[in-house]
Image (tube, rainbow, N blue to C red; front, side, top):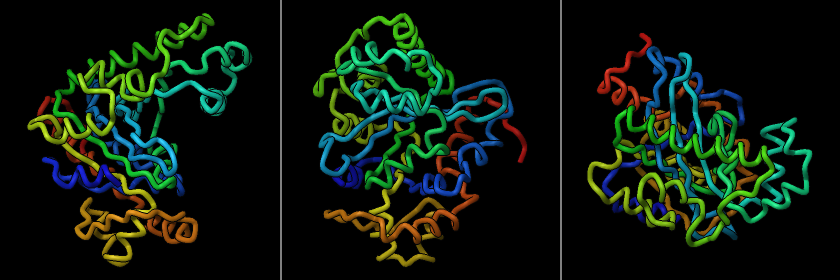
Length: 300
């Protein structure tokens, strides 16, 4: 919850987005809600620095990533890049995300990568439930959509995607990855350090972006299950649903002690169902950026 304390005194106003709850229902809010954004050439609509609050019992410094929304062949594509330490869980994740990949049949090589700094690329991070799983673990997710043009955003995407492609070429050749994961230097913030000039600690990067003028165009908070339950106690279900449809929650509970949300799962499912059809809050801002940059959109 320390992210929320920092955000309280920060320059941008955070809009609240509960669309990641739709992962329980298969509603695909990004794919369906973004249909009108991509009517022109392939472009990167926006790039966000993403900050995850700490997970219970671990990761005291939180986590960071970069997320891009872009138009490809008339459809919106949602891509998140995140660095972490290559471990056994990385192997399991690769097996789930890339079944049949030949590298999965080389356990000795995969073991040799453990401890390396690894760049992962998540596709459809909201629609496929990656955000939803983290929210269910009682982590808040904060997105800071950067004040850059679509050309600049496209350049940032090309740079980080080239790193990812080069990494896979290295792995396909069964060569070692060049960097080791070091918690206070080459860690999850490595792309934020390399591309945005931020420091190696997520909280410091978050503070730098939220306290400097003209850096952030839109700020979005994805509330954890625990936070939603706290807000529901304050606002009541009907009022909270209406607030979430408009991306605003006035009475923000900031609970310190967190409990498992299992008993509230039926209520969370009903909340997600009530919000089906609500587009991600950043889409309005992205449409404005696209119009300002002269990108043609599909008519409503």
